[in-house]
Length: 436
Image (cartoon, rainbow, N blue to C red; front, top):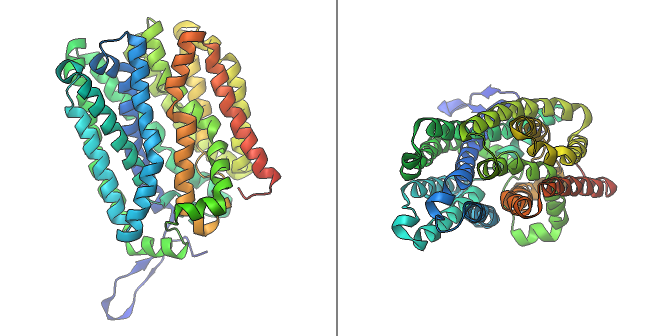
C-alpha cells in the first residue's frame, strides 16, 4: 500500500508537484459530499411528514395523505440502484468528473423543481405526478453521486484505524438532519400555517439547491485531481460490469445489504416516522419535537465518533453485531416510550439517536472487503443502494401504516426484524470466513 502521509516530490523541467493521497483530505470530501446529500434527503423526508399531505393530498384525510407522501418518498430508494448502474456506464465512457457533475446537477435541478412545483389546488393530479417524477430523478441522481471516496478512504487508512476513518463519512447524516430540521423548525416558529403551506415550505428546497452547488465544486476539486485519479487506478477503484459483479460477488452484495439492516431500519424510525406520528396522534408542537430531534442528532454525531473508537478496538463486524443486539433490546420498549407522552417520546428519540449513531457509524462498508479490489467500487455502491432500499426506503410508510392500523407494538416488530437481519447476515459472513 502506498504511503498515506502527504509527501511532495518535484520533478525536472517544471512539472508539477505530486502529493500522495492523505486520509484526512479524503475524509473532508466524504463529509462534504454526504452532508449535502443528506440535507436533500431529510428536506424531502421532513416535508413528506409535515407539508406534502396538506399541499399535494388535501382530498384525503391526514393519515392517508401522509401514507401517500411516504410512498413518494420511497420512490428515490427504488430508483437509486438504477442511477448507480447508469452512472457507472457514464463514468466508464466519460470519466468520474463528468459523472459526478451530471449527478449533482440532476439532483439540484430536481430539488429546485420541487421548490417551484404548484400544489394540488393549482394543478390537480398532475402536481402529484410531477412530484413523483422529480423524486425519481433525485433517486437516480443519488445513485450517480457515488464517487468512491469512502472506498479510497478505507483502503488508505491505517489498518488499526479503519473504524475511525469509516465513521467520518457517516457524520454527514446527523449534520444534514440538524440543518434540515433547523430550517423547518425556524419556518414553523415564524410563519403562519397559511404562509408555510403556500410558500414557506419551498425555502428549504432552494437552500438544498445552493448547498448542492457548493458541494459539487468541493467534491470535484478532489475527485478530478491527478493524485486521486492515479490512486483510484492503482487500487482498481473503477466500475465493473454489473453482470460480472453479481456472477462473482452477488452473495456479498446481499450479505452487505443485510449486515447494515438494523441501522438502516432505525434510521427513519427516529427521524421521519415520529414526526408523522406526533402530528397525527400527539398534542406536541412541531417546533418542540424538532428541537428534541436536533438534540438527538447531536447525540448521534457524538455516538458516531465513539463508534470509530470502539470498532478499532473490537472490530467493525463485532461492533455492528453488538449494536444490532442493542437495537433488538430497544425494540422491546420502544412502543411503550412512544405511548408515554412528551417525556416518553423524547426518551425514544434520544435513546434511538444514540443507538443510531453507534450502529450507523460502522454500517457503511463493514463487509466490503469481501469484494476485493476489482469489484469493490461498484460492489460498495450497489450494496449501499440495496441496504437503503430494504432497510430504510419504505420504513416510514410501513411503520406508520402498521402502527396506525394495528398499534405501536408493530414499531418494535419492525425494529426487531432489522436487528435479526443484521445478526443473520453477520453470522453467515463469519461462518463462511469472509473478510470484514
